[in-house]
Length: 435
Ligand code: ADP
Figure 1 (cartoon, rainbow, N blue to C red):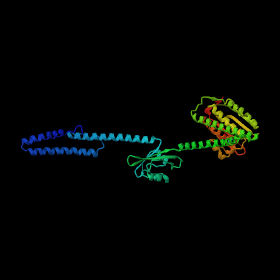
Figure 2: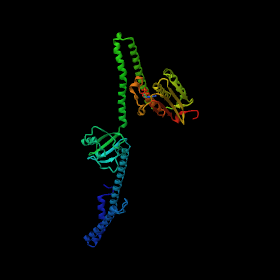
Figure 3: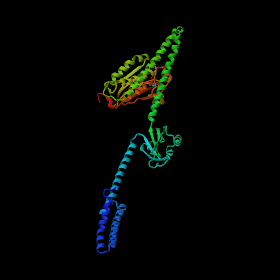
Figure 4: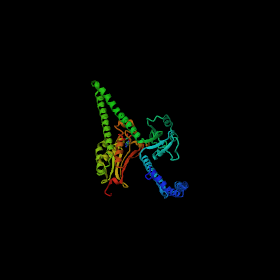
């Protein structure tokens, strides 16, 4: 009820209005006529303000009511108050709606609201990107016409949304999307789609990794098991056979040990995601140490090493990782080079970058294998390389070590001629006398 409205006040006003007419009618003994005139004046007066109210409500552009005396001022004020409150509520609602929209845009998932028959009522930006929806042109179109997969059609028509469904984005960008549908505000449906491409990739990688490790361990374990069974009744084993058994078992255990060490090194590198560039690594000393360490193996294969190492050309970064990268690349070059061939190692400034390269005259690598060389356990010729003690982990370690130094492993190779493995450290991590 309005603050000003009061039935008693209204009745009092009417009586006060009629009082002069009553007195005049009484004096002139025309009471009824005078009262009728009084009432007619009151009707005319009210009619005038009623008309003004109508004009204000329907024609005026302002929300401010016209001025009026008496009871009409109460009515105008009452309507004005109600209008103001409605306006305030509308403003509050629109702020709320805007906040809801902003929240819906901020969530990292695609969201759509469907009506009971499955036609699109609302969508956020991400849903428009994931499903190629044109907004508002696609409003009121059935979801099954927007996501045109028979599997999704069947899922939607069945109406059992307890399980999520995974689809490839219909826009053709190979994004894997996990869709969940749930009832929303009575009759509507809320669709939430999440990009699970990365998650699924990681799941596949984990499965591949377990399968690869198990496969890699199976061969040496089978070999060792075979020999151990033979050794069980060792008396009958000729000395030559015995020697071969011990040699093979040693080879297999060394390979397993190497693999485990490399896996540990890889997982250590993955854990250390924090970049630390506070240490200056003297690369010339580090590379000369590696060369000295590998000297005996090179001599054994009668390899000729051509070395061009720039002294004082250092790198800000991790010594262990750079040693690992250099060691793995040079070990590979030695391993895959034929006896008596040449290997060239260089460490020099190329423009502002510091470049490390190892060139060998080995068998070379067919082009189609090059992009996959840094994958874990990837070997070009699996059987031959595993027999030579290769694990297929060395280059993935190199990749990780270089990523830490904002660099990438590059490979140039010609089958039958040889390979060049190289990487360039960006200028901001290079420390040389000129920089
Ligand atoms: P592995 O322990 O098998 O050498 P890597 O990850 O170091 O593993 O190398 C992956 C594969 O790349 C090797 O199995 C080999 O096929 C190929 N490869 C690496 N370096 C060379 C090279 N210098 N010449 C020819 N092939 C190479």
